[in-house]
Amino acid sequence: LVLALFGALDSDTRPPLVRVATLETEDIHVAAAIDDGLDTLDVGHHDGVLASTDGGRTWTEDLVGVDAMALVPKADHALLVGGHGFIGERATDGTYQELSPDLADDDVHGLARSRLDPERFWLVSGEGALYRSIDGGLSWAVVDEGPIVRIAAGPDGADDLWAVDAFRGLVSSVDGGSTWSDGAEVPGSPVNALEISPDGSALLLATGMGAFLSEDDGASWEQILDEPVAAATFEDNPDGDDIVFLVTPAGGVFRFH
Image (cartoon, rainbow, N blue to C red; front, top):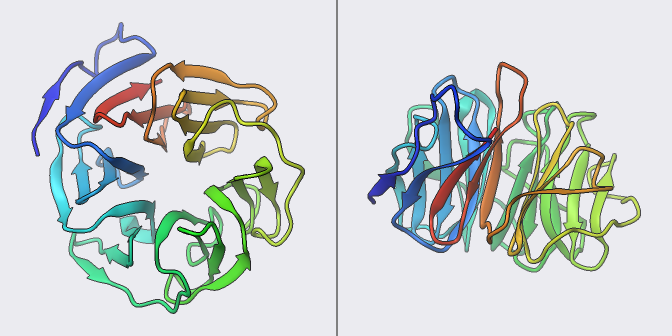
């Protein structure tokens, strides 16, 4: 896949939002940033995974032939990949292997990993059920029948979890999804991604009405892109400022700082 470069990332006068590339693929599902010191970003789409090691400037095909609906970094810079009837892992050497977990519904639409326990994961199925794994994704147990739409793990505890519920909106849990807070309204629909900044200070929503940031646990939202956004992720920034990457349904890659 080929992309065109639209902006430089190293300008001292760069605007808060800059378009860095356009991917020549559509049907984008998910984005993930890996803290490996290489500025690595991954995007899951209808036919695999694209990877960038220069902050989104250039991309290469990393996995082909899998409808990659969900991505989440694992320990040691590995990557867990889920999709329609598929769960696999990219090892640190870049090779992929398919996992065979015992799931009643193996149509994976969302993944999250605990910030404090590297072996603890959550999975959202195509039917909206929430599963939890405590062994790195090898086995799973149902936590909530749903309907959960999106999930993200917070930094305040091993079972700190946020989610978008199809009926209640934005909810949070301190016990891994067994019980939830009261719901709060989300600013756009459909919600395509829910992300939490590395320090937990900001929530990010990618929706069909744009991208939104909240620094007060969803009480208020700032719109940072006013066009549909298919995927979004935070990149861990050593300087402490939040860096957001957004991908539109047409393949536009944006950086917000």
